[in-house]
Length: 102
View (cartoon, rainbow, N blue to C red):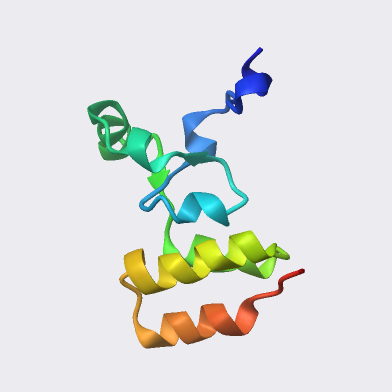
């Protein structure tokens, strides 16, 4: 069964391409894992607009709707510091929106 190994089938238009391994630790949306998103197949789907990259606004909306675990919070901070390429105003906005549980 696919649920036993952590895969599920959804339409590509409802999934997002992960642009960082860190995103997978805290984003609660259907994501194509970073390693898979780098393949020619998913690059072709992106060019044909059949799947989208996960953008800053979508990430911010997801953070607003989530209560992060400590593990997820660490993933978010790693993404912000290492991979996001975001400007300071976006980082401040994200940090002001975080809710987490211990």
